[in-house]
Length: 395
Image 1 (tube, rainbow, N blue to C red):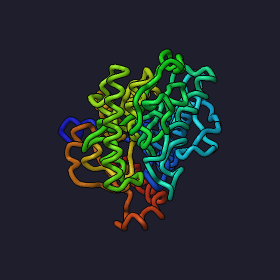
Image 2 (image 1 turned 180 degrees about the horizontal axis):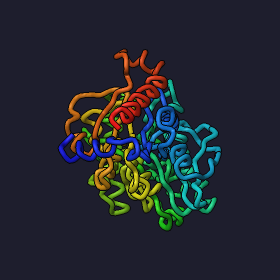
Image 3 (image 1 turned 60 degrees about the horizontal axis):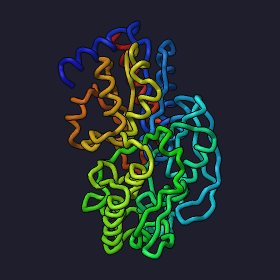
């Protein structure tokens, strides 16, 4: 914490009367608590000690599981159910959200094409994003003109051809026959037919919550970095990477687009590249999208303190993670930020420079994760209560 941050932090917590409004804006604690649960527990801890303090809850999600729930909780709207294809082309009941304006749809690709949907059947050669395209189509048919799409947690490596095919794009081999809409099918791709593409894709605003900057192919690309967690062994990774490179060549030949040069094109098994190639999409950090949508800067303009958090904070948190994204906005408004986390890793000095005033771990008795997760809710509550007791003690 530098001298300016410490000064602001101390002034905000100096007296009981100055602590009037706290904004609560955490990410989920992966594997233990959703962002909504974290918000509720933090609010309870605050109110138990300082019932007079105004609290504003903004649950945050970075584009993966929980994104729809977080947006609906923060902004309001309706959860929409839809039957779509899962990553292996089986019918499933999925969902997305339409926000309170009636025109903005929030879609988690993981709800149709996510890793948990295949469990023991993981195979990125065979999985598809077709179901994600079906969710988009349903939203368009309901009159939505803005789409916010989270691309975390994918089971796929198809470059987004499944998604695009559900919206009318045709992917053909050298004999003009449709190719399989999966990572394996890319090997036989020869030509892309855009003549039947849904024209509404060019007319609506599409924001893709993309928190990685990986290219489509290569050692930092979709297959090499993310393929193993989706079930790919070394040989399959190389095969899928070659297919994505071939796909990039076809996109350049037929559409004139060099997707490899676009940061984030390798997100979700190349779905990032598919969105750029076949829609009007813009790839943006998920934290920036949700903060803009909820008018975060306006909300914190008269706040005395912001409480954020995530499961673990470390040097990697600098790469678009929620606490740092929150802190960067807060620093401009001169509002101190406390990060409440499950664990604290190494290399966090730069995190303070981004605007975080203090970090507190909820692992109060220093136990391993398998034990800490069993008591995390109680530990979070007691940690927040201890912090608020301190604010009273120094008043």
